Length: 326
Ligand code: A3P
Image (cartoon, rainbow, N blue to C red; front, side, top):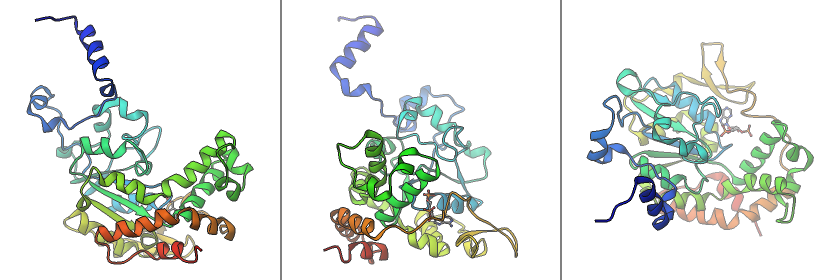
């Protein structure tokens, strides 16, 4: 038997299996050998049961807020860097490991909420996210919200402008979405953040290559906006949340905000902050037309995907985006 010091064995191992240099965290409770050496203070219940995966600008904060109103549903503790979002499965937080992730969730036996969830809107289009999420949370349910990808792109552009982003302030939306691959890098990056998450079918297929379709719930973002009570009822049915929360008593349309808000009392509502439901000029027609063409193949694939998933009707925004594209 030939052996070597641990460091050398480690080096040799990663020479032989370089792809394993990038960790994929599994669930310690899936293997009795892990469980045996794991601290008794830890529990695999301290993980989310469902994930709201985004994409950004589709109404994810509204959904997060509505879910958090339910006495049996609880999200993670806030992160000092990314506020309500942990953003674990994408980016460098993943390398902080499982303990870091779990520390964001209350230990269930000390908490009242029975349904833990996490919302990170960048998960939707993150290349590595479905694989990593599935390795740790194979039974988690996934919730996504879709709106017109063209309107999502415009909302993201307005969002970056409102945050004082110089590129968004210096270039019109049309210039951003028509930027070429020879344009300056910051402009290309903004273009990509506007356009890429909206290729919905592509991202959903990636999620579906890891998770079975029964674990995925797709919300029509326009319906969430105009009829959140019904949307939340459907979601509660999908998540099998018992007892269901009567959102009709807790959400009311606020004409000043132009959105549904949380009922405080007969005269008052608590709405999302000014950064959600912003006022901005409508998108130029030429930009909308261009985006209709840009997303044509993606939207066509989305219709097929929705049919395959058993959706009986196609969202109105999808029909509109697909109309008059020739
Ligand atoms: P706009 O600000 O462009 O109108 P996210 O939370 O994912 O960033 O999405 C923000 C979008 O949520 C807003 O985009 C707004 O249209 C939408 N939204 C849906 N329901 C809302 C609500 N009840 N209150 C505020 N915004 C809501």
